[in-house]
Image 1 (cartoon, rainbow, N blue to C red):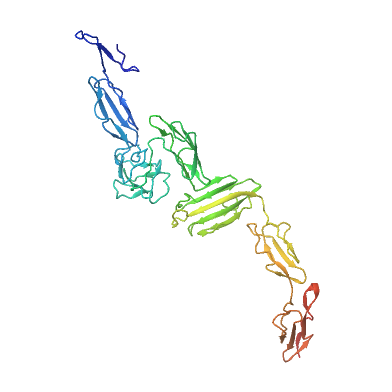
Image 2 (tube, rainbow, N blue to C red):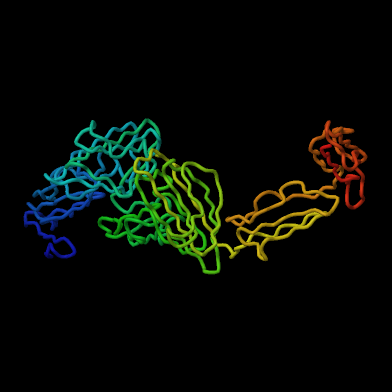
Length: 502
């Protein structure tokens, strides 16, 4: 019997043998090749399974074919495919010419790469075009493993990316200046990883953010949703991606990137404002403005945790919703942690970096936390003091109010008598005290005289005698004695005399 070779099952002829045999036997003749096995990370298509038919082999993006790309079905009692079985491997380097789109994966991906490798890839775009690289994933095992991307067609070209020198991937990717890019990967004698760029649905990653997924095996159909850490904004790519295409598993969108951006509007009750590109260095010549808005009956407390900018760069805080509002503070250079408070429900932050700034490197910039707080346009009530009292210049302790401390008779103020409610709603100075007076005050000198003291201090029972100069006559008592007047404290016995010209 015979069935169509194009049906679900391969057709066969069953032939009876001739009469020369004393017993009837049956032989089976196969007239077609079995369908060739698809290589791992590759594809296969067939023109025909019959003798003379061809099988065409190809690899998924990022993999290279090992073996023949075309195999022929050869005629025999059992037809077979010519040549050796084809394989798809992530090779160590190679020339990729006339490219319009593609992918590079680390040697052996998705398995770990080997030790002691030096791999070179030369990417060449069509004449008159340039190459843009987007990093899908980089995970090198050790500090001694290195990935270099050069802006040219050889190792001596200028580096666009060096994993030794940067801890982050450029979110915007890399753009060549010519039609060539040169990539080198080197590994040391110990430690391996899956390195860079996956050819299928690799484990997604977002720096300065987090992700949730319906399937952490990243199988086809897995959906991943991304979110950024506080202070960062989702850029590039989609907030949600899905693993698609069972034949060539891949994410339907590019992984997003979380970046600290220049400028923004914030309406959260608490949050974080970071210098552009934090914790990496900000760029020259930037002018960034952030607006922070809370409920109308609330105010904003600003906690400047890190401030390390150039001396000619400026970070300014405005007590309102635009740059015409009162300036809370303006800062440049480095400053230890401090706090500010607004008197309105709005805060505007402006950062201006000098076009010639020389502040570069990890951790240079600023980190500003903000929190919604209860409305409070007054300073806190000041405490009373023993043996004294206080008085205020205003019924409410608003900014600019002055509180004066005074002491009861027999006591004197020690410290600052006046305290002012400052712009940040804190009091100037420290709390004074009233201490008992144990001596008389210096009564002063009398013109045209000299005085004789009984001791160095004006304690109780001490005396001062005034003697007029020649040509002057004393008017009043010449001797003053310090007496204790009870609740009134120590006082002098007499008023100061006078020396009159005779």
